Length: 190
Image 1 (cartoon, rainbow, N blue to C red):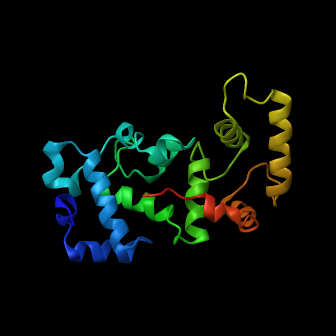
Image 2 (cartoon, one colour):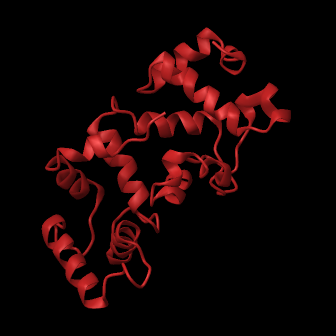
Image 3 (cartoon, one colour):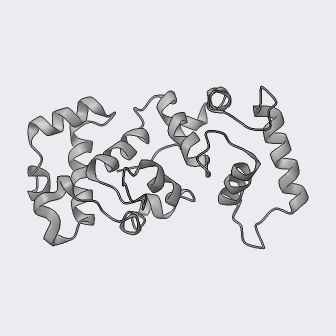
């Protein structure tokens, strides 16, 4: 173990392993990456440190993800709601994106990431945000209004089981359960 990873006690590593879907090696690697994101003057007290969202967005795995901002927001426990993350927030994020995480865990966090207004349901506005994140919202990639309305109507027709105009968490889980590629595509590598 290097200097930054040796700061985590074996007991703490074991506790993190019990609370996450991560292996000991993944936890040590996560600690090393978190330490690298931390400024040098804060490395001695890394467990209480919060790293700004902007610094997390420099990680290649998040930088390339169209939902990077939402990911930081969803996993952050910051009382200021600024998307900053503690080491434990970072571990929670890595755990949810781990190949070992269950479909239930992955779908729970995916739903929260896609629920842009955080109202507990995916409505037309959330679905429009989702499509724009996936296709791009620049003029050359953006869907026309009629294409967007048709796509959202198709998504709701397929997913909105109770026909209330939104997709709730259980409807989302039902759709995800029929998509075997979801689990393998919903991951971030360490």
